[in-house]
Image 1 (cartoon, rainbow, N blue to C red):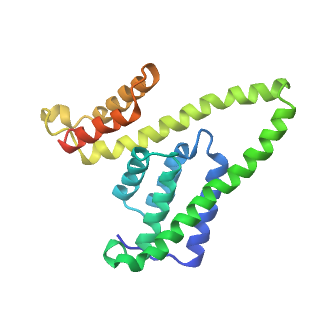
Image 2 (cartoon, rainbow, N blue to C red):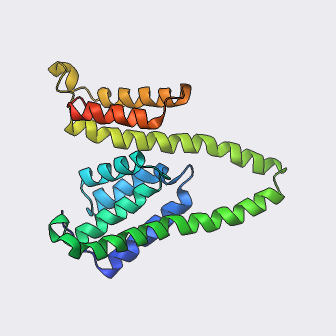
Image 3 (cartoon, rainbow, N blue to C red):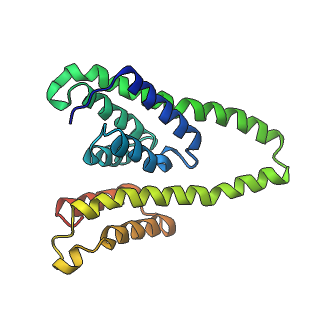
Length: 209
């Protein structure tokens, strides 16, 4: 996939990710639905496969989950440089995509967190401060559910469970049921996430999801 990005497009990428940085309650992963809307639906800078693969690869790799933003930026820059077929000549723009996206997603929230943490520490006994902190919990849960919904939908549309009967394989709840099961396992057990990722990769390899 190849695209063409002007200077204004790079600025738009930076400003959009900077805005999402201030909305990333619960981590950058909670802003995935809007990133998908902006990068895939609106700007068409990334394909569905590039978007989903970037998140999956980053989640499987060690380190903070914000690494998926770097991969999204890399893919945007790589596409702007002519795609994979352009070889190393596309790498400067790919690295520029990494820099723009990571600075944008980290800097505003870091500055806000630093300032807000110092203020809250001085006023932590105020009733409205405690209420605000408790009120953020359902917001985080809702954003994470939206992310899970978004990431499971492509699996329903492009990878039906071909090993099952036709009437069952086309049902959209198959991938969603797997998502719910994984969420329950993470919540109620101590199974390591890497094992769940490995099982998911295995199911995908045999064409079940």
